[in-house]
Length: 158
Image (tube, rainbow, N blue to C red; front, top):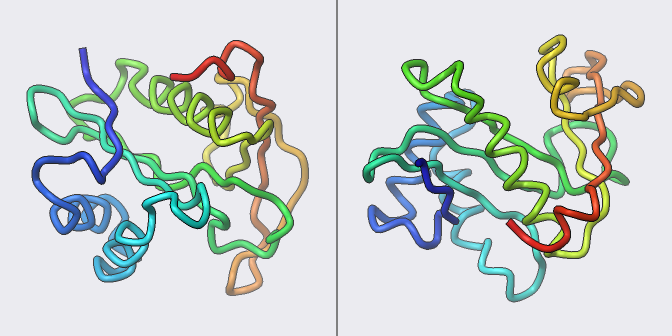
């Protein structure tokens, strides 16, 4: 069974974790991820947090919880960001596993709603997400915003 861990607990180190996120989402520089990860110790704020999905010590996926996902709606948070599952592992509901983990982590940090922005149709809805409105990306393009209320069961932790 795959294991979800905080990048701060990854034996390969934060730099390797940042490189993985960059490879999954190449539009964002490794230095950005590394700096964010280095400041994700929870001492001053519960956000951001970054997670890796491991199978036999191989990284097979990732996600993060952030204050914002490069979208105009800074009043909404936390954001579920950077979901990625390796191609050879897709179709096994591992994305759903990470969504469930995120709900538990967000609930443990005291949040009752998660947000995300995506252009995928139908994927997040099957996991209980609801489209609530549009915001705007940095380039002014509309961006769909989804929300998920964190169920009471998730509040007991991941």
